[in-house]
Amino acid sequence: MVTAPLVLGIETSCDETGAGLVRGHELLADAVASSVDEHARFGGVVPEVASRAHLEAMVPAVDRALAKAGAKLSDVDAIAVTAGPGLAGALLVGVCAAKAYSLALGKPVYGVNHLAAHIAVDQLEHGRLPVPAVALLVSGGHSSLLLVSDLPGELVPLGATIDDAAGEAYDKVARLLGLPFPGGPPIDAAAKAGDPAAVGFPRGKYRDQTFDFSFSGLKTAVARWVEAREAAGLAVPVADVAASFQEAVADVLTRKAVDACLASGVDQLVIGGGVAANSRLRALAQQRCEAAGIKLRVPRPGLCTDNGAMVAALGSELVARGVPPSSLDFPADSAMPVTAVVAA
Ligand code: KG4
Ligand code: ZN
Image 1 (tube, rainbow, N blue to C red):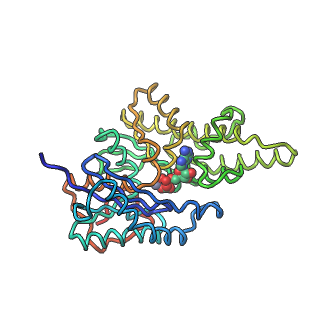
Image 2: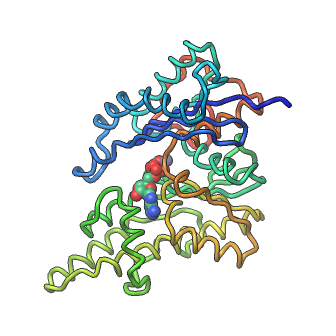
Image 3: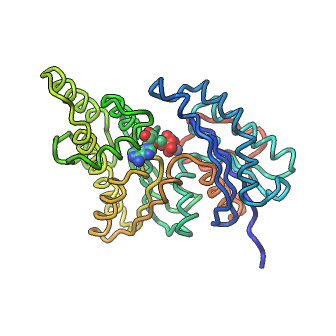
């Protein structure tokens, strides 16, 4: 039996330094070092701090992944790295590391799209993604709906946020509620004790017939509501506000995702990105997909947030398809469009 090539995936687009090892669709190791604690007091990721943390964590993360997989660096057949989108300085650390490994090992390197990797990672858990599929991508920097006619081939944008990303809304609302950064996990946890119908927060662009999103009005509505409570000398019911905010986000994301499937005549939805770790989004998506006859795939929460395995998963697919690797001078592209799956 011919074994699939061993692909090393490197991720440094934001505050997670990820190194993953994948063979075919099999996840062998996933080492992630996060600099989130260093950013927490600023309420958001500080690019320069993230870049420095990547520099320190990069080689140890690769070594940890290799040790976990019981592999040697010389066993690696190809390297994939996030080329964009993301923070320019942070991306550069991973891209330079990947090129150095490629040169030292004499193995090909693929500069890949972070967003496509968030979709490809699902294959490590659920096998090949049946296409066509609709992908809902929800992270700290992006919220979009895409038509996937082939993975890793064609990703056609159906809609995207016109202002804040879903994860960004979580992070900003957490701050308003005095919860730590990043805001997704603490809001998810707080919401469990709250009433999602306590406050009727607005659902931006809910019935506008597009597949675009808007979350800045929701964020402002939460801010005004909290301010009004405080001005009246009343305590802010954090669990209720968290649950009501989360319900508004999950409602609009799942409604538009299901509508996008129906409008495209597609019966397969895949959700990826950090916000896909959200318990209410996962439950509501399951419920609405079932009702609409759509098959749903969401990777386990640990694979939704940034990691190296997702990059290796996409790299593995590119290698399997015989896609030519990137040239050694490919750039880190902070604004890499979602339609560019691999850097030339
Ligand atoms: O994909 P990701 O790890 O990084 C980017 O590519 O941006 O996404 C990070 C975002 C953050 O905004 C974080 O608050 C959000 O994902 N997030 C969540 C949850 N876990 C992480 N949002 C809602 N619920 C969660 N459980
Ligand atoms: Zn991401």
